Image (cartoon, rainbow, N blue to C red; front, side):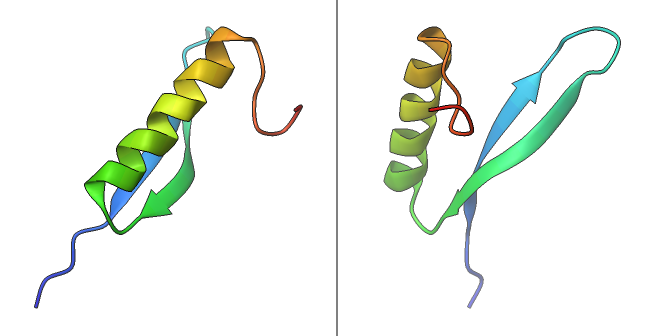
Length: 52
C-alpha cells in the first residue's frame, strides 16, 4: 500500500540565495494545511519558529 506524506516547506527568495527548507512532515493533508497556515501567520508577524 502506497503511503502519502505531506511536507510543509518554507521558501526564502532573498537574492541571490534563494532557498527552501522542510519545516515539518505530516501523515494527513489537514494537518499539513494547519501547519502551513500557522507558519504563514507567524511569517506575517515577522516571527519564525527559530526566533519565537
